[in-house]
Amino acid sequence: MSNTETTALRDEALRKIGRNIVNFQKMERALKVLIVRSDIRGHASELAEVHRRKAQDVDRKPMGRLVDEFMRAVYAKDPPRNEETSDLSEAWISFSFNIETDKETIHLLKRALSLLVAERNALIHKMLGNFDGESEEGCRNLISLLDGQQDRLKPHYDSVTRMLGDLEAAQREMLKQMEALLLTGSRDA
Image (cartoon, rainbow, N blue to C red; front, top):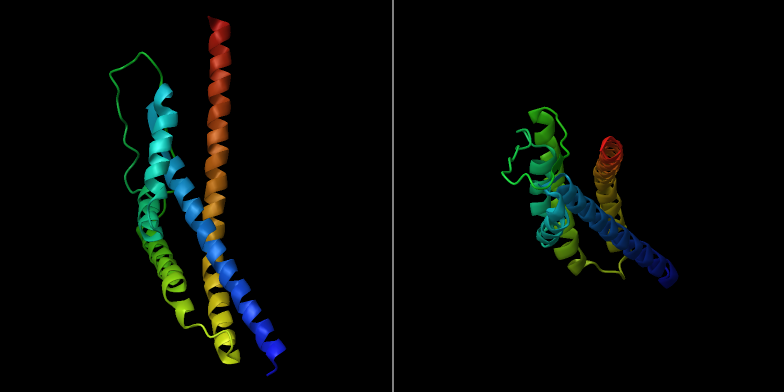
């Protein structure tokens, strides 16, 4: 194989490494947003700070912990907790986003996401250290591994981004309903 062909194969492998790393990062970011936004509650004046603290906490977690938290937050088996407040001087707001499904589906999803975390960790921490960009076979093998990894990641990423879109749509609708309620209330006063 010529040097030009080896260089082209190496460049293709490097491009696919970048693609997979970027896509894992996008998946991680989507999980973080879903976790933070899926359960928000507090007095109206505190919601921004509640959101900030929750986002700060979630931002420091590795992907494996994010998957665990995502599964607990979005696929919770128990209904959202109803907190009562004795301070009635301002509005208490609570919003939660949950998906109900059977235990087997939850188990399979958790397992699939855990395998993706293992693949992500292998890509970042192990796979690239032994990559020989001067070897045609090494480049082809890595390209094949990366394409398979992308094929396994994509359906889960697509699912999580659809959930994120659904969550954002629900929050927009909630805001619209609250604005309508406030307008109606101000006309009645």
